[in-house]
Amino acid sequence: MIDPITAVGLATSAYNAIKQGVAVGRELQDITGQLGKWGKACSDFAFAEEQIKNPPWYKFKGSDTHSAIEIFAQKKKMSEMRKEIKNFISFQYGPSAWEEVLQIEAQMRKQRKQEIYKKEEFKRALIEWTVGILLVLAGIAGLALVLYFMGRNQGKW
Image (tube, rainbow, N blue to C red; front, side, top):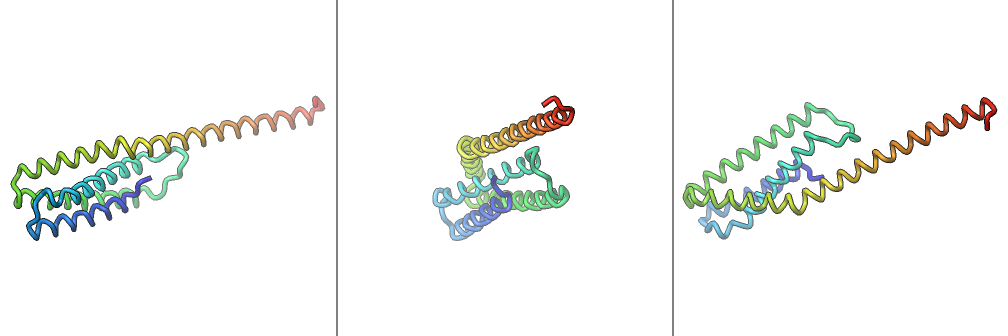
């Protein structure tokens, strides 16, 4: 599973590179790679946030308050980065450049969903089904064992 803290860390490093690139007057095409990394990290954070909000049934939840506060703080940080990147790019290259950034971000999100998130969801479903089947089999085996000992105690076996 993708960790939201890691995603925010990646987004922060890409954000700092974008900020430096804009400060030295690089062209938008020169910072596209960093924008792509930032977009991937934002997408990963959103996916991780969704996974934390909807944990698998077999996992015991930790402190809901701690998770909620952590996600809230990280979400605010990501929002501030987005706002600053928008301001940098719109000021430096014009409002149409921000539209280009949004297109890059949408493309990254779509690509990540097709490649990585589907694999994560498949892995999660596989684990859930495996654990569920093992629990059902353990229950059936336990019931059979109880019935066996009851029958043996009554002299039927």
